[in-house]
Length: 165
Image (cartoon, rainbow, N blue to C red):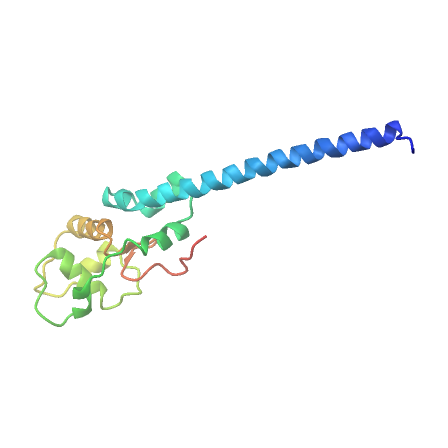
């Protein structure tokens, strides 16, 4: 029978120690991946209530560590259809500042609108208000998941380049 040298035993012991460590790390990685998935789902569940409470997408991203791109992608599930936006300048006049803002935005849905631009573009005779009132109306629309609050303003369509990260 061949004898096993002390060097062979040491090499086998070192190999076994490395294998044990890799098994431990692999198990930890599995646990962390599960926890990360669960964490993302919990954040996703808070996205709608956060927006409704007035927390911006940028703030949710900063607080959660997720990208705004990921959060905007998740917002797709929460967004509500707004058929009146397609009336644009046609049809009966809007009955509220929010409706006037939506229909104004509907004239150029891919544009980032600031409250100042909305206020200036609302048609004569439609509900309008002071800049603060328009700003509040835009935020209510975003909180209600009707429009997107992008980095450069509000818009009807998802912000450009938003994909899941």
